[in-house]
Amino acid sequence: MKIEDLCGKVDRFAVAYEHPQCYRTSNQIDRPMNALDRYLYQIRYFKGNRESANQKVRTWALIYNFMPFCDRVQKRKERPKKSSRFEELNGFVYHSNWLENLLIAGSMNGFRASHKIR
Image (cartoon, rainbow, N blue to C red; front, side, top):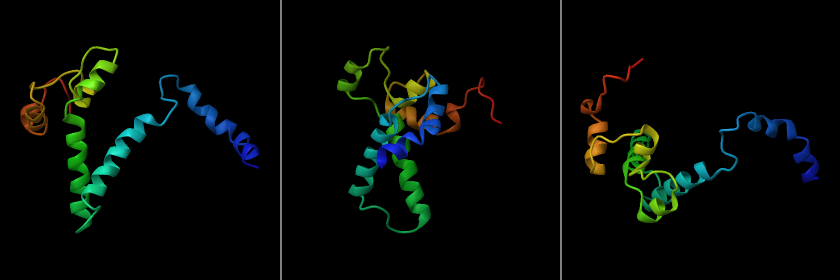
């Protein structure tokens, strides 16, 4: 039975609860994956070679991380207003314009002396 199979995996599921800061649902993965799936559908998935497919996904990820949050998302959040996922993750922006921020972060002009490259 399905329930017996699930109960047999309790030890594997319990490992996640040893990390109280981790998420309990898959929303943090599902939302970006749904957006990526919509993008891939719009471009009719991959045409060409593996390198062009890789570049399309990397381009989408860059834009997704730097584009500004919509007003509805901003109103729903209880923490201080952040302009994008980049600012939410890093705690700063290089420029108030999201596209300028992307260009600076993608170039050496965005290099910060306090960050060490290993």
